[in-house]
Image (tube, rainbow, N blue to C red; front, side):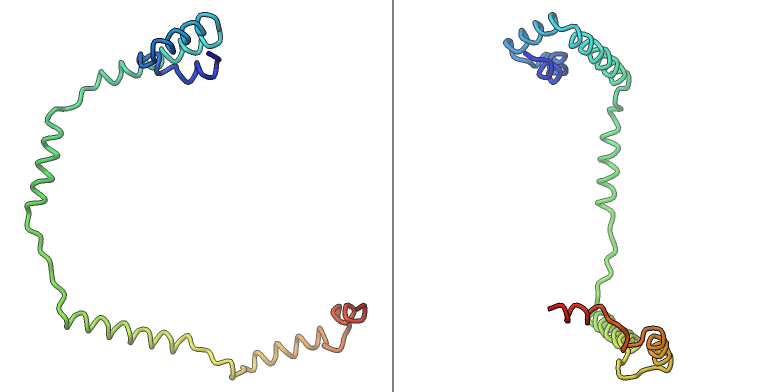
Length: 144
């Protein structure tokens, strides 16, 4: 057994869940490899301290019963369900359609209308970058 396989079997060796052949190979490797032996001892100490702490805190035997009783009482409590009437559904649908129309109207921007501000920007762009100036695309067309 190599070091990698031994390291993956630490917990199984502590819990004694290895087969007889694996247990023998594990013990032989631990006896021959000082590094794995030290690592195994450290893991074993940590595992034992964790188990000691877990055993220190015993679960409350009545806790499960208390939780079950509380869930049962909530299930048995009558819930008040307010049914939707067809009138309420119709009203909600009409309100949704009206809201859609209002939002659509507010967001509608016609491309046919050009504001004076747009014209100013177009003029400013033409002043700084005249269309009759040199264009890099013209150069590409002449090289073809």
